[in-house]
Amino acid sequence: MGDYCSFCEMPLAAALAVEHIRCKDSNLDLELEWTNFLLACPSCNSTKGTKVDTAEDVQRYSWPHLNRTFDLFDYTRGIIRVVVDADPELAGRAKAVDELVGLSRRPGAGLTRAQVLRGSDNRYKKRRETWDEAIAARQDLREQDSPIVRRQILATARARGFWSVWMTVFRDDEQMQAALCEAFAGTAKERVYPLPPHLQPPSPNETS
Image 1: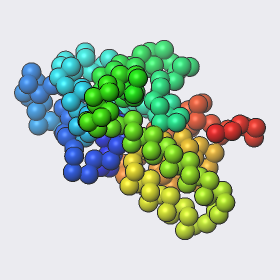
Image 2: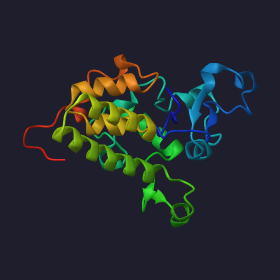
Image 3: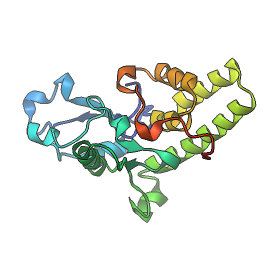
């Protein structure tokens, strides 16, 4: 999955945590079990805490390494929302994982003023900055479509993270989407295509 948070897709750099899917305190036999690990950022890791304990608990959520979560969330303008026309059961599991790690938190919607001022949870801030940068990159590409510009966009995307944001912004560029899948290590193309309905190329009259 690369050096990115498995949940929010923020780049981890040195600030990473090995998240135990099922709480290790009450599942000692899973403490070193590889299939019980996910990389997570400090915000997702601390918000999740020890809420997932049993195998039954695991089934309540959509997990990024097991499920096509790309189908279940909309990332437009950096705001995460559960896709309204998704399968009801899957949408329920997506909402559960959103609440589990606070994926959709932003100022005025689950993110407190103190957290904003301290910068203790900057997931939305970084995701919105990445959205704006991706929009600017798409405009650059429209003005000068060249291999050099495309390589620079991919380098920026890898550095900024938030793969789903880039895939959303470049939803009408199959070449760039394929390149993004290659650029982010561990992306399973078979779990990306066909694109979910909310990510189909925009109509000619649609504006961003």
